Image (cartoon, rainbow, N blue to C red; front, side):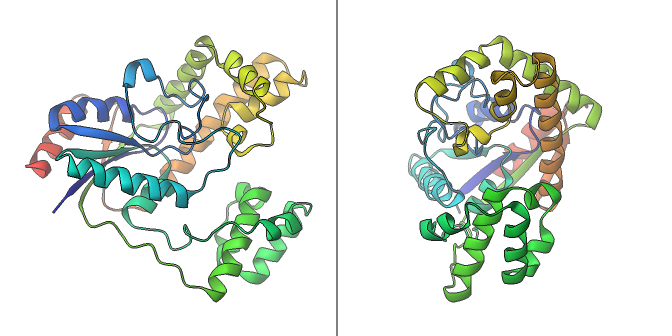
Length: 297
């Protein structure tokens, strides 16, 4: 059976670095599973670091002015995985977007529900509270499962309503992938992870993040675009418009990245197949390599 290796976990744990090292040892090809790295022209803020990572599939799939869905990602990633298998190499799915990984490995029944532009237009002026009330009436289970952040996010609420209405009349099915899958997850305690996130934000600022955002705006990208809802870019808006000083912007970015890491762990902990490794422990890389070697052989 074909094999698929998955490296996952919260942001700033060194997933890509580990995947690159293992790719050299096991003839692997990386496929990014990061919802922020699909956009072109958004390299620094999304952590592509192309000069270090080389060619990773899944980077630069769409314009930052376009929307992108999990359905589009699953279609791309599965096609990429099949191509890597044909090359007799090991596909390595690496990233922190749990929904993308789930879509590729297990399939997601709602991922192939197409956008309904007429519905979206009819809902776009409603408040988050109104949208949540509509969702509660149409899909109470989905509404009850949403956290406070989701309940205040109009885009996510509209998508949930869109899916709820469509699956009432049509059953969608995306089958799980036929492969022997090994999951490796990287983690660290909160203090270590918070420090790594703060260091990485400072690094991205020093690499020219502000110039990158200004170039995006000059090229016609709008603050309202889906791409600009990404962490860092979204927080930069208030600083760019003079509403807050730089220190407040940077702290807000760091804080939101730290909250995101916490949400990522909540998501990944649901998956009992993940083999977890604490990056603050000595020798963890060797243990990962030993596990992969045993599975791969």
